[in-house]
Amino acid sequence: MSSELLEALNALEQQKGISREVLVEAIEAALVTAYKRNFNQAQNVRIDFNQETGEIKVFSRKEVVEEVEDPRLQISLEEARKINSVYEPGDIIEQEVTPRNFGRIAAQTAKQVVTQRVREAERTVIYEEFVDRTDDIINGIIERKDARNVYINLGRVEAALPVHEQIPGEEYKPQQRIRVYITKVEKTTRGPQIIVSRTHPGLLRRLFEMEVPEIYDGIVEIKSIAREAGDRSKISVYAHDPEVDAVGACVGTKGARVQAIVNELNGEKIDIVEWSEDPVIFVANALSPSKVLDVIVNEEEKSTTVIVPDYQLSLAIGKRGQNARLAAKLTGWKIDIKSESEARELGIYPNENSPLLKKEEEEEDETSFEQIDLYQNVEVDEE
Image (cartoon, rainbow, N blue to C red; front, top):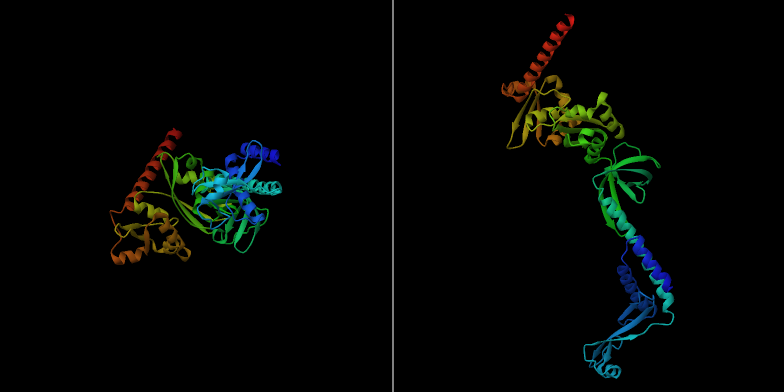
């Protein structure tokens, strides 16, 4: 047993990275417990594990006292000095009390400790691997489900997809491949517990990073996300390079990039809008696809009054208020939507100084210049 145990300790240190000293300490502590349990001993003992020979010995530890109250834990000064005349009260005397059949018990105990430590080491490795992947996407295979969770095989560990992290109406079938977002990794007595999500806004962010090279490279930045999973999401983007169309980069040629994400999320609608530091422009963009005539900002209350054409009022608010709700979440501004006719009655529209009016005029001017260039090119070609 001795040589086998030593070989096992060496192998574990090299292959699993488990410190030999840590294992020896754990074995000695377990042997103390095993000795007391198997031999009905309550005395203090110390285990000596010879790391060169593998030999294991048990030593009782008793305190030297003038008058003995508990013979299992104490020894009289008179008896102590029979062993060695130098002993004084308060000293500790150790005497070997190794039982004859302790070798078998020691072997079983050591095996149990080693097995437990190997399991703990493997769990630690898995934990450290996945804790570094928090807020990241991972692929897995659905194993089973119950009333509370869908369980997903991630390779060496299983992840739980709780009900509140599942997309409403989405089906989860055994052996189905699935892409999920890691929200939490915790240590438990049964090993690392990994919680994943299909509804987290971070999933949408990571999918865009994967599909849009400009986002991955940092040319286009995702500024904010508002998501009602399985139904509709809004995402605001900004290009650090003025030559790059942030929205166009995310949409892709013929909508290919955004469509790949929509397919991954089983048809979830995604509105991509351009971010602006001007809340008037940003709020107007966020209410897409509705046309916005003006946005009146209240900085103190961080609220806005948005004016839209009468025929666009329902579109701006959205089904069950969803469009306005998502826009408010995306921008961080409260949004109160009013029709053009109501705004005129209240005397808050039109506003000649509105940034939206100026923006619209600039876009019209750009269109006019483009048309002039087009006409000039046509005339040149005809010559």
